[in-house]
Length: 419
Figure 1 (spheres, rainbow, N blue to C red):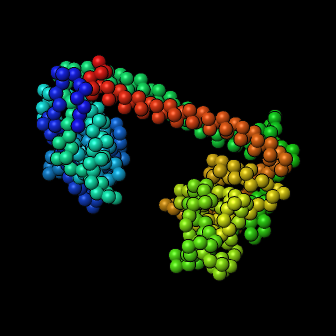
Figure 2: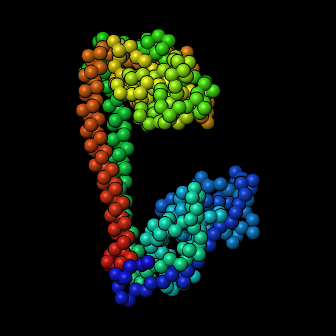
Figure 3: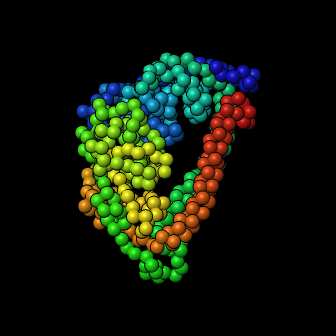
């Protein structure tokens, strides 16, 4: 229900009394073409401006003209995880409206301003999401949305309110963009710090391109322990669900490396299966690495209290020579964007990148300083990265405050308190 704290001369009307919400056409994927008229689908609707730059296309037909999307049309997602997301179409390009995309069409233009409605839909969004039915695929009907109430001030007042909203939101958006820019710059600075650290520039001054004194260029095979140092997980058929028991030796999975969380997971094997797969055992101090997909190269160190277990087929186990390189130093180096690029550059597959074979992986090299200098570098990095963390936390808080302020502006606008 729309609140009662509105000016007395304002009206409360059901949405369907001033506009219709029309569903789109069920285009078939076999009709999609490289050239033609773009189709706006629910996946093309984000909060704000709707773009059809990456939309699928179909051949223009007269039978589709009833589903044309025109400049300034307000569209809303009627199903799926994006139910309730809305935007305004600002392009002059011809486009069609797909099934489950709702289009608001005002028929009482002497009562309701299109831009005023666009901003007011924000106040309906939570109710739309709440009223959506269905489990994995929530849906909401146009009839249900049309039964929702909106406030309707006199038309001239609506235009003044829209003007004020846009002025305030423009200032807010400018501030938000500055925060996002600072966030991106901080990300670049983090990676630069890591690169400088692992090139010796944090612990040595005036290098002039040469390798710092005492540093060596070593391959992964030089800093890992023999055959046990780099071990891919067993074939998938070696670890099946029928082998799992309620408790025992942990089966480490890709998710442990991806989320840097050694404690997650619910799969275990018994002593017999553990001994069968003893070559793939994972112990405290081991490093585990994700071997496929967009998360290729994610790494996790198993802490002292980690449960003994085995790695599955999606992981690589790394055991380092502790007299040559510290786990913490290696992990930070491994996570650096400059090192990750090398892993992806050598990966196999296109749609699903996979770690290069162990034989080639062993040949990847890195700069390795003396242990004592590794400790100095880690100390320097931790100090500077802690400051970065605090700055990032402040930026995130400011971004949240900006969103809260936006909601406050819109709430006041439709309570008559903005002008």
